[in-house]
Length: 94
Image (cartoon, helix red, strand yellow):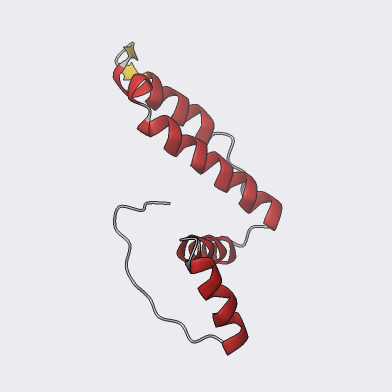
């Protein structure tokens, strides 16, 4: 998921859910949790597929930010581009 342009969105929550979410906010995990849940629901994926695909996205993010993998190139492509392209082929569909 692109995180370079996040747009705020408001939702109304029951008080008990809001309390639990506020406790996650202290650990800076609330927004990511909500984004992941919405993404999973919209894509219609099962929890397993969604978790698997989220892990692949996390891995590609690490590779993309790795300075060595982003600077070394072979045949006109950086190692990070090649690895990310290959990892994307593993993504599970709905």
